[in-house]
Image (tube, rainbow, N blue to C red; front, side, top):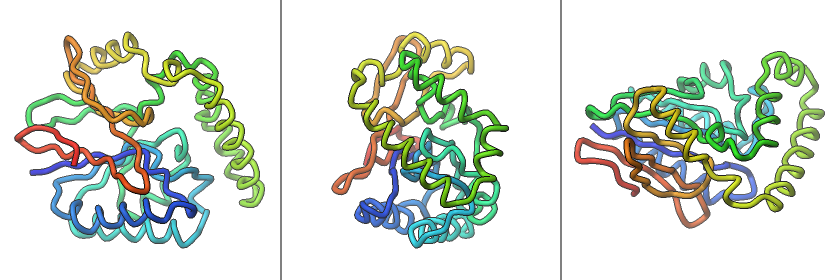
Length: 233
């Protein structure tokens, strides 16, 4: 059995090469898997399940083809696409998981998450995250006309890019102490996450932390896990 883990593709119309990498993965590798886990930021931004575009239709079709074939596809929302919801799930067959989810990977208790919740040193972002994840705020936002939501999303994205340039790399990385506590809380010895865009395998004292990288025009970060172990392909 094979499991695949990906995150931080940030699919958008301006980088069609990454979309092609994703489609190639979904057509060639994913059908051979027991399950595929997408750990957030599949899209560069998501303003509601009612948004439509050629890109969105293409991605939906690829996921639907996979799940219809019998391969499970699971999703944990990222900081860019946390509004992906029930409608998207129903249209694709993709199962949406909570922020933290534990699975058994060949006898190893493994915690999955996007990774943004682990970056507790970025206090400003955590405050923003707490606000936008409030259900009543999301409900009000999704009631707005699509054109309004697009403009709001563009402003937020522009502001986010500016703030990111002003932050140190240390602040935007996970907090080691908090991450260890989370692993202990869920009684796991392995953690897989994305968000930081820093592909690596960290062997801590009591658990292993595997970080998924982001996707680029010339590189796709894909973690393959079998009974022989985990490796990036």
